[in-house]
Structures are given as C-alpha cells and as structure tokens.
Length: 149
Image (spheres, rainbow, N blue to C red):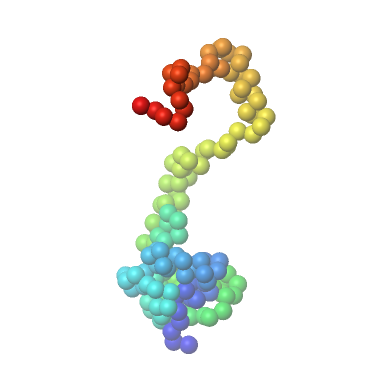
C-alpha cells in the first residue's frame, strides 16, 4: 500500500475516534497535508507532513507508515512521528492551561435547581420588601387594548 485516504489514515492513527469525525474536522479546515488544505479523499503517502488542530493544540506529524485498519495505540503511534517543535508547543500549551485555566471552566452551575430557587426566593422575601414590588406598564384607563396611538 503506497497511498491512503487522509480520513482513513487519521482514524487508523487514532487521532479521531471515528472516520466520520475525521471527515468533519477535515471539512472544517482543521487538517492540512503538506501545508495545503485537505479534502477527506486526499491521499497521503509516507513522508507527507500532516498538520491538524485538536482543540487548542496544533500538532504537526510526519507520516511514517500507512494502515487501513485501526489497531491498538502502540501500533497506531508507529504510523507517525511528531515533530520536536510540535511536541514543544503542545507541552507549552499544556503548561499554560495549567497555570491560567479557562475562566468559563470555573462555572459550576447553570440554572438553579428547584431547591436553590426556593432559597433564593426566601432570601428575597426576608431581606427587603422591595423585591416583590412589580412595575407595570399598563395602558391608560379607557384605551382599548387592540388600538394604541
């Protein structure tokens, strides 16, 4: 085998869990072969350079071998060799994430639960009577509801 589709190779090399995920990432423009945007049907050969983005990390790997079947991880790692610059950039990105994590990840809750909602409402009633006052933008008396001027 001297050439293989890029989507199949990425799946066999265990960069993506399914071949359809690999195809989606290629279609989004996150995979380049020899510094050119790839299509899922693009064929790779040993010696080609593949650049792929996985989340915040960009990896640059050289294709060493081809395989059309997905095997165990140690076998899949023999299909490529990551460049030293890529390894260094990946380690730097991991260190940066460790020291300065994403602020959005610190949000623990979304909407309050029913119990939390009751506690919030109870706190509003206890703290000040102004919380329950409602302002209304009602129409002037005598104005029909359907017609506004």
